Image (cartoon, rainbow, N blue to C red; front, side, top):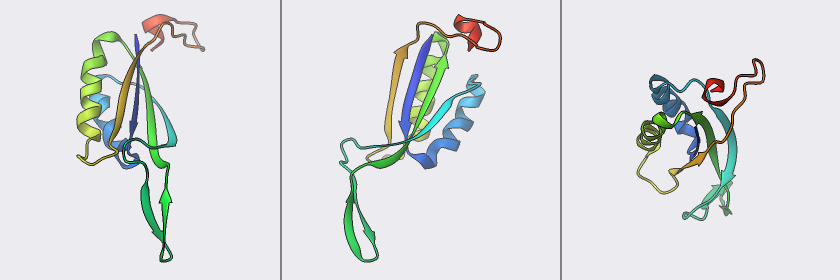
Length: 112
C-alpha cells in the first residue's frame, strides 16, 4: 500500500477529483494549506498598495491506494493539475505500513 500526497492549486481540486474517480479512487482527504516553493510568494495589490504574500494558498490531497494503482494515479494528478506555470505543486509517494477501517476492523488493503 502507498500513501500519495499531492499539493496542488486550489482551483484544480475538482478537476483532479473527477479525473481520479474512474481510476478506482474511492476516497481522499483534502486539506487547505499554505506554502511556498521556488516562486517565493507573490506581490499583491490591495487598495493601491503593493505587498508581498509569502505563503500561497494550496490544497493538499492524501490518497491511500494499493501498489498497482500508484503509477496511474500519480500520472493523472500530474497531467490534470498542470497549468504550465510556476507553483503547480508536487506529488509525493510514501510507503503505507498499515491501514485499519475503524468501523469493521478490516486491515491492510481491505481497509482501503
